[in-house]
Image (cartoon, rainbow, N blue to C red; front, side):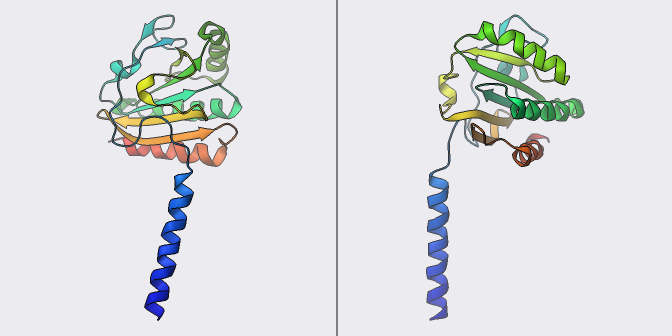
Length: 184
Protein backbone atom coordinates (compact mmCIF):
# COMPACT_ATOMS: atom_id res chain seq x y z
CA UNK A 1 0.00 0.00 0.00
CA UNK A 2 2.84 2.41 0.85
CA UNK A 3 4.48 1.67 -2.49
CA UNK A 4 1.21 2.38 -4.34
CA UNK A 5 0.75 5.64 -2.42
CA UNK A 6 4.35 6.70 -3.14
CA UNK A 7 3.90 5.97 -6.87
CA UNK A 8 0.64 7.94 -6.96
CA UNK A 9 2.28 10.85 -5.16
CA UNK A 10 5.22 10.79 -7.58
CA UNK A 11 2.81 10.75 -10.53
CA UNK A 12 0.86 13.73 -9.19
CA UNK A 13 4.09 15.62 -8.54
CA UNK A 14 5.35 14.96 -12.09
CA UNK A 15 2.01 15.96 -13.60
CA UNK A 16 1.98 19.11 -11.50
CA UNK A 17 5.47 20.07 -12.60
CA UNK A 18 4.58 19.51 -16.24
CA UNK A 19 1.51 21.72 -15.85
CA UNK A 20 3.64 24.50 -14.37
CA UNK A 21 6.26 24.22 -17.13
CA UNK A 22 3.65 24.01 -19.89
CA UNK A 23 2.67 27.63 -19.23
CA UNK A 24 6.22 28.97 -19.28
CA UNK A 25 6.99 31.62 -21.89
CA UNK A 26 9.12 30.31 -24.74
CA UNK A 27 11.07 32.80 -26.83
CA UNK A 28 14.16 32.66 -28.97
CA UNK A 29 16.47 29.84 -29.83
CA UNK A 30 16.22 26.89 -27.49
CA UNK A 31 19.05 24.81 -26.01
CA UNK A 32 20.97 22.83 -28.67
CA UNK A 33 19.73 25.01 -31.55
CA UNK A 34 22.08 26.70 -34.02
CA UNK A 35 22.16 30.52 -33.96
CA UNK A 36 21.72 31.77 -37.55
CA UNK A 37 23.03 35.05 -38.92
CA UNK A 38 21.11 38.32 -38.58
CA UNK A 39 22.02 41.95 -39.19
CA UNK A 40 21.81 44.87 -36.77
CA UNK A 41 22.89 48.48 -36.79
CA UNK A 42 25.72 48.99 -34.32
CA UNK A 43 25.14 52.01 -32.07
CA UNK A 44 27.87 51.84 -29.41
CA UNK A 45 30.31 49.14 -30.54
CA UNK A 46 33.49 49.27 -32.61
CA UNK A 47 31.47 49.44 -35.84
CA UNK A 48 29.11 52.19 -34.64
CA UNK A 49 26.94 53.52 -37.43
CA UNK A 50 27.24 50.46 -39.66
CA UNK A 51 25.03 47.48 -40.34
CA UNK A 52 26.70 44.16 -39.55
CA UNK A 53 26.25 40.63 -38.26
CA UNK A 54 27.75 40.28 -34.79
CA UNK A 55 26.61 36.66 -34.75
CA UNK A 56 28.83 36.12 -37.81
CA UNK A 57 31.78 38.08 -36.42
CA UNK A 58 31.78 36.22 -33.12
CA UNK A 59 31.66 32.79 -34.77
CA UNK A 60 32.17 29.89 -32.34
CA UNK A 61 33.15 32.13 -29.40
CA UNK A 62 31.12 32.11 -26.16
CA UNK A 63 28.38 34.69 -26.80
CA UNK A 64 25.55 36.25 -24.84
CA UNK A 65 22.91 37.74 -27.14
CA UNK A 66 20.09 39.80 -25.65
CA UNK A 67 16.97 40.88 -27.52
CA UNK A 68 15.18 43.66 -25.66
CA UNK A 69 12.10 45.73 -26.33
CA UNK A 70 13.38 48.65 -24.24
CA UNK A 71 16.34 49.48 -22.04
CA UNK A 72 14.66 50.09 -18.70
CA UNK A 73 16.57 50.34 -15.41
CA UNK A 74 16.70 46.60 -14.67
CA UNK A 75 17.62 45.71 -18.25
CA UNK A 76 20.45 48.23 -18.05
CA UNK A 77 21.63 46.66 -14.76
CA UNK A 78 21.65 43.23 -16.41
CA UNK A 79 23.62 44.50 -19.41
CA UNK A 80 26.11 46.26 -17.14
CA UNK A 81 26.71 43.06 -15.13
CA UNK A 82 27.04 40.92 -18.26
CA UNK A 83 29.43 43.49 -19.72
CA UNK A 84 31.63 43.12 -16.62
CA UNK A 85 31.68 39.32 -17.10
CA UNK A 86 32.72 39.79 -20.74
CA UNK A 87 35.50 42.17 -19.66
CA UNK A 88 36.79 39.62 -17.13
CA UNK A 89 36.76 36.84 -19.74
CA UNK A 90 38.56 38.49 -22.65
CA UNK A 91 41.18 35.74 -22.62
CA UNK A 92 38.37 33.24 -23.29
CA UNK A 93 37.21 35.47 -26.16
CA UNK A 94 33.78 35.88 -24.57
CA UNK A 95 31.48 38.33 -26.34
CA UNK A 96 28.05 39.85 -25.85
CA UNK A 97 25.75 42.18 -27.71
CA UNK A 98 22.36 43.73 -27.07
CA UNK A 99 19.77 44.06 -29.82
CA UNK A 100 17.01 46.58 -29.21
CA UNK A 101 13.95 45.70 -31.29
CA UNK A 102 12.38 48.86 -32.69
CA UNK A 103 10.20 50.07 -35.54
CA UNK A 104 12.13 53.36 -35.31
CA UNK A 105 15.80 52.43 -34.79
CA UNK A 106 17.04 55.99 -35.36
CA UNK A 107 15.04 57.15 -32.34
CA UNK A 108 16.92 54.66 -30.13
CA UNK A 109 20.45 55.77 -30.93
CA UNK A 110 20.79 58.80 -28.65
CA UNK A 111 19.33 56.96 -25.64
CA UNK A 112 21.52 53.89 -26.21
CA UNK A 113 24.68 56.00 -26.45
CA UNK A 114 23.75 57.73 -23.18
CA UNK A 115 23.07 54.38 -21.45
CA UNK A 116 26.43 53.00 -22.61
CA UNK A 117 28.28 56.15 -21.50
CA UNK A 118 26.49 56.55 -18.15
CA UNK A 119 26.96 52.88 -17.24
CA UNK A 120 30.42 52.42 -18.75
CA UNK A 121 29.27 49.54 -20.97
CA UNK A 122 32.48 48.96 -22.88
CA UNK A 123 32.59 45.34 -24.07
CA UNK A 124 29.00 44.69 -25.20
CA UNK A 125 27.80 46.68 -28.21
CA UNK A 126 24.28 48.08 -28.02
CA UNK A 127 22.62 47.61 -31.41
CA UNK A 128 19.20 48.06 -33.02
CA UNK A 129 17.15 45.76 -35.21
CA UNK A 130 14.62 47.36 -37.52
CA UNK A 131 11.30 45.91 -36.33
CA UNK A 132 9.84 44.75 -33.06
CA UNK A 133 9.52 41.12 -34.16
CA UNK A 134 13.27 40.55 -34.40
CA UNK A 135 14.94 38.12 -36.79
CA UNK A 136 12.26 35.64 -37.92
CA UNK A 137 14.44 32.55 -37.50
CA UNK A 138 15.04 33.42 -33.81
CA UNK A 139 11.33 32.91 -33.00
CA UNK A 140 11.03 35.76 -30.48
CA UNK A 141 7.74 35.81 -28.57
CA UNK A 142 5.92 39.13 -28.57
CA UNK A 143 5.18 38.60 -24.85
CA UNK A 144 8.90 38.50 -24.05
CA UNK A 145 10.32 41.86 -23.02
CA UNK A 146 13.78 40.26 -22.97
CA UNK A 147 15.03 37.13 -24.69
CA UNK A 148 18.53 35.90 -23.88
CA UNK A 149 20.41 33.25 -25.84
CA UNK A 150 23.88 32.14 -24.75
CA UNK A 151 25.90 29.97 -27.08
CA UNK A 152 29.35 28.56 -27.65
CA UNK A 153 30.63 26.59 -30.64
CA UNK A 154 27.47 27.73 -32.47
CA UNK A 155 25.27 25.77 -30.07
CA UNK A 156 22.78 27.41 -27.71
CA UNK A 157 23.42 26.39 -24.10
CA UNK A 158 21.14 28.83 -22.22
CA UNK A 159 17.82 30.52 -23.02
CA UNK A 160 15.75 32.98 -21.01
CA UNK A 161 12.38 34.47 -21.96
CA UNK A 162 11.44 37.26 -19.58
CA UNK A 163 8.13 39.11 -19.46
CA UNK A 164 7.90 42.82 -18.71
CA UNK A 165 8.53 43.63 -15.03
CA UNK A 166 9.84 40.10 -14.23
CA UNK A 167 13.53 41.03 -14.28
CA UNK A 168 14.82 41.61 -10.75
CA UNK A 169 18.10 41.37 -8.82
CA UNK A 170 17.67 37.65 -8.14
CA UNK A 171 17.05 36.81 -11.80
CA UNK A 172 19.92 39.05 -12.91
CA UNK A 173 22.27 37.12 -10.58
CA UNK A 174 21.01 33.80 -11.98
CA UNK A 175 21.52 34.93 -15.59
CA UNK A 176 25.03 36.20 -14.84
CA UNK A 177 25.90 32.89 -13.13
CA UNK A 178 24.64 30.98 -16.18
CA UNK A 179 27.38 32.55 -18.31
CA UNK A 180 29.60 29.84 -16.78
CA UNK A 181 27.79 27.35 -19.04
CA UNK A 182 29.36 28.88 -22.15
CA UNK A 183 32.86 29.47 -20.80
CA UNK A 184 35.16 26.56 -21.61
